[in-house]
Amino acid sequence: MENLTIRLETEKDYRAVEELTREAFWNLHKPGADEHYFVHMMRKHPDFIPELAFVLEKDGKIIGNIMYTKAWLESDTGERKEILSFGPLSIAPEYQRQKLSKLLIDYSFEAARKMGYDVNIIFGNPGNYVSRGFVSCKKKNVSFVFDGNFPTALLVAELVPNALDDRKWMYIPSSAADCSEDASAVEAFDAAFPPKEKKWMPGHEEFYIYSHSSIVQ
Image (cartoon, rainbow, N blue to C red; front, side, top):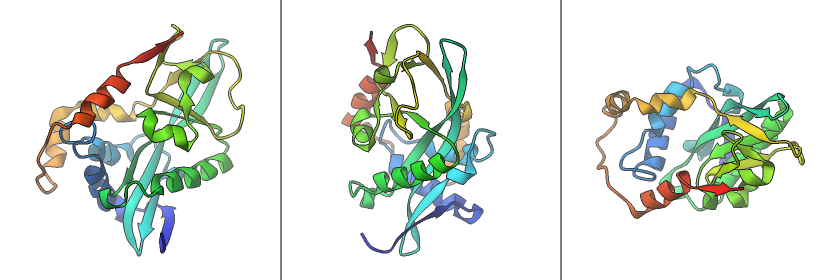
C-alpha cells in the first residue's frame, strides 16, 4: 500500500483517533463499544506512554493507531519489572486485513526497544496476535496470580529474545482501563458521536470464550 506514514499522535489528532477507535471496535467484542472512551481517558492517566502513541496515515488521513501503557511483572523471587501493554490497536474497517496492524506493531516495538523495554503483554484474541510474535502466557510462566492458571487471552511478546527467564511471573496491568467499567460515563461520552446501532454478533461469543477460559498447568 502506497503513501503510508507512521508518526506520533499530536493533540490535534485526538478526536480523529477516538472516532477511528469507535469505528474499529463498534460491535466487535460486544454490542457497541467503550474503547474510544478508554482512549480519551488513557491520555490523562500516569501510566500512559505518549512516546509510543502512533498514528498511521494514508494520503494524510488517519487510518490506524496504537497506544501503550506501562504494566509490570513481579517474579516469584520478588523482582519487579516494568513492561508494556498496548491497546487499543485500531485500523479503519475498510483497511483491515491488509497487514497494517502488523506494521504498527513492528514500528512501535522497535521504538519501545530503543526506550529500553523488552516485554509486551496484552489481553486479546490469540487468533489475531500469534502471527505477530505473541505466545501463550503459559509458555513464559506468566499469569495474574501464582496459581497454575494461565488465561487463554493473556499473550506475551518478548521484544528482546529470552527477556524472561524460567521464573514464575505475575502480570500487573495498569489501572488505566478501569474507566471503561463506568457504563454511564461511557454512554455520556458516546452521546457526542453520531448514533450507531448496537448489535449482538456471533463473534461476541468467541471473544467471551477466549476471555473467560484458561490453560491449567
